[in-house]
Length: 199
Image (cartoon, rainbow, N blue to C red; front, side, top):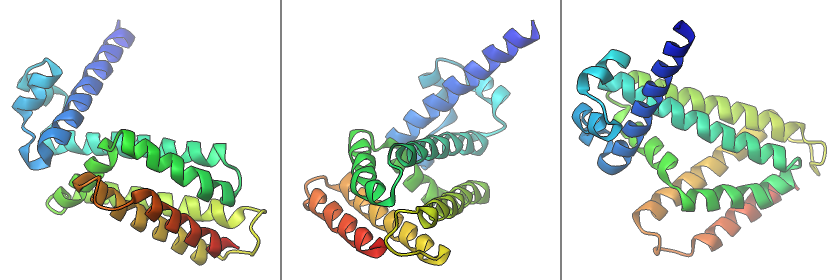
């Protein structure tokens, strides 16, 4: 039946993307080969090429998966914490604790940003995601009625970019050396600065 075949095809494609994700974490974008991915997925190189035109197409699917899952995580934080103060106070801590438990998604984004210089479509996906998230979060932050002062959209965008840049920098350092600095203290400084911005 066509419906069942489509389900099987979708399942196998997801298994290949999941295997590619794990190989990228181990070997990076340049070290990930179709052979390694096929071995991890328990399939053949030919089967991978059946679903994905080439390695770059597969890597783009991995980036899309990571971007989708990060977006879901951010949306979940905004659902749990309706006010900006809570999002800053609790949501940032939740995000950081989640990252420490599983840094894989941010590691893939870091890798893809470097590798994306060679593949414009990867770079476009990442930048499109980044712009979309910045705009959406800025709108949500500016619209929060509990803000002590009215934030213009440009101010809210600056707040989001500051947040992302600082978290990104901390994440890179943490992945290189978790003992380098007191990350919790640095996170506290970030939270204080963002809270003063909306006060």
